[in-house]
Length: 216
Ligand SMILES: Cc1cc2nc3c(=O)[nH]c(=O)nc-3n(C[C@H](O)[C@H](O)[C@H](O)COP(=O)(O)O)c2cc1C
Image 1 (cartoon, rainbow, N blue to C red):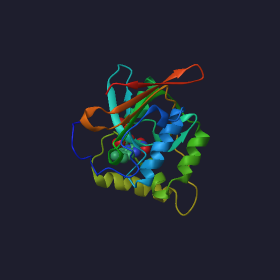
Image 2 (spheres, rainbow, N blue to C red; image 1 turned 135 degrees about the horizontal axis):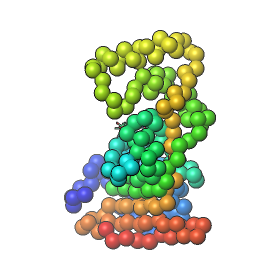
Image 3 (cartoon, rainbow, N blue to C red; image 1 turned 90 degrees about the vertical axis):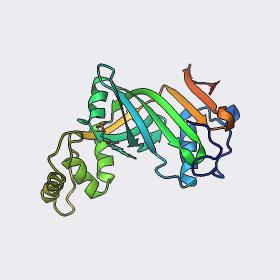
């Protein structure tokens, strides 16, 4: 990040503009939730959007945005197509790194760790909670595969809609579902003037976490 005199979007009243160890919750998941809550309160756009990095079996990295759909003591949940690039990466190499950034608060969170697929029951519950059009769209698309035209995509969606008319429940396709990232490393970053940003790392220590300040 380049130095600048004015933060993007202006400094929010929710940003204290500094981060000290006493401000941090001992549990990083709770700390993340606190910062997500602050981003929501500050009306920042897409407070749960995150960049998710994966790598294939040869180590070639790939990154894309996702939406975090669950935060709890087990980790972070997100949903996608298992046959997408990220799905194939995670099948071959079940680890990931994730970054959230809230420009209006000058805050970044990074975490990484092992990833596992959620069971079909949990994925089906989430799938069923999505708007009907989103469910049909998920069934109609094969992310990353070439398509001859926009019309072909629309036709695939129309075919799904015809197959699932009315209010009949739409089944979870076996190529779609959720993942749980269980971070074993976290970092919380608060932008500060003069590039002397505040950075704190959480590393597992016995049954809790060791927190240490890092140089920016
Ligand atoms: C803000 C934002 C949120 C997104 N959320 C998701 C998501 O939760 N799940 C998903 O599969 N794709 C999501 N996408 C689309 C992905 O970025 C990506 O295009 C798609 O999943 C295919 O990625 P892949 O080929 O690397 O697997 C989102 C895109 C944006 C810009």
